[in-house]
Image (cartoon, rainbow, N blue to C red; front, side):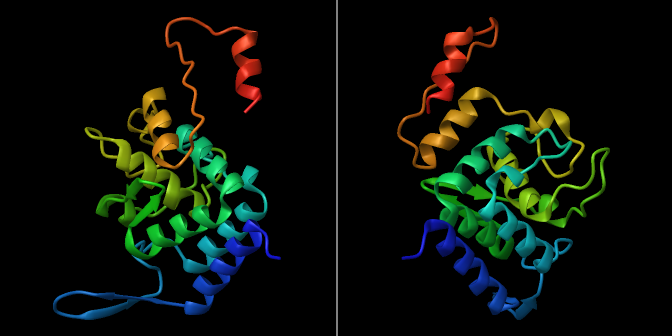
Length: 193
């Protein structure tokens, strides 16, 4: 019997075997080896995706301030690796993905951005595609399109709660207090999930 992780890896194998994606428009049909992300190589995405399916703790925002999306995506990759893999693949191929009822979209600016090396290294292609897309989706005022946009990368607790609920999680507890520090009891409750 195949595990959820095996199913996710099989999905990545199928994506790799497919090679290029075909994008049809009203006037033409274009073959795109790099999906809708011209600066993200398919091979780099596949390598990162496989590593993260095997070990979701590899999901890393590096120095991008995408800790909120990274936390959410890490949980999805751990709990539902096939859903995680499909979301990354869909974002790469079409610019849109769904986790539960949470629709994630990437802007043209985001997809057109070429990754750069920041102080602690370069964010992995598989992390950038989904983490930046989630951040971009959730922003209604600030556009998020590059690694150095700290303000537009901030995730408020209510956003994260919504992602988890829309993503299909049913036992979501928001014990956030932005003004006061929570106590050890709060940390213990959080650790029990």
